[in-house]
Image (cartoon, rainbow, N blue to C red; front, side, top):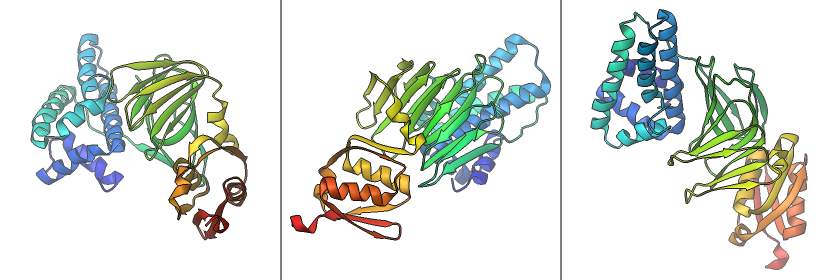
Amino acid sequence: MKSKNALDNHLVKYLNNKLSKDEFDEFINGFEDPLVEAKYALFLEGYFEQLLAQKEITDGEKKAELSKEAAMLTGAIAKGNQRYFLRKYSRAIGVAASISLVFISVLMFRLLNYGGELRQVELIEQVTLGGEKSVVELPDGSIVNMNAGSKLTYPKNFSSTHRTVSLEGEAFFDIARDTLKPFHIQTKDMEVKVLGTSFNVSAYPEEDETAVAVKSGKVAVAHQLSEKSHFLVKNQLYVLDKTTGESSVFERSIEQELLWMSGVLTFEHSPFPKVKRMLERWYDVEIYITDNEINSYKLTGTHANENILAVLESFKFALDIDYKIEGRKVILSKNIHDQ
């Protein structure tokens, strides 16, 4: 979908069964974008909570039944993953129309019988561009430190049952404890669930790995395509290899994963293509490599609050790499004396 307003408009029409065929095709195909899926879940969740609050339903059994139906739509069940439900039917749009609209119709019939009126849920997007970092305070008082090239999406007000945000990129979360409202972080490849803790999530879509490092408390991590969850505690690092789907848990100090918040850029046996992407995000530059041999290098090192010239000079000294800077463009090549 082309814009947030277009997405909101499609969602409202969808819930009221007023989408045209072309709009419905666009709506279903939009779920290839994980951010659209996350917005859809948050949107429906907000509708449901508002409707229940407006009518003040007191029948516990009926409310539980409605909650279960809403959960089927927002992803709280269905194997713990709303993408499982949506993607299953996005491959066959005709089936998606009949199946998903039946679920919507049942829920809307039940809710509208209580006299509720649909309202849009306001979503907030915080974005850090290349070379930027920022600190965000969420509606519940939780604090999020965002690394460069990241996007955080969350509702203006969390629901009464849980707190859900979506992340693309890297961020450190210090979550306000609330045992009655679990905190969920959705990325393209996994979901993280906590009650109150501090941890780092690295989920850049262009990287081959996604990672969660726990500083305090307990964290549950689930790969989107697996029913198995990993439960992490302090000084444990979860790493998901997105190319194979395999995941590992390591026990060690996770301070290295948090150095970016102090302005420290660090590499640990990092392949040069990964180093290139890190530098592009960190310094907001575009790096071009003229000699493919450079991509075979692996780097280990630490750069504390240094500008890109200092980093490039270290490359020149340690790896015999020449560089040329043209505005935002950085060109790397093998030292001419080696050729």
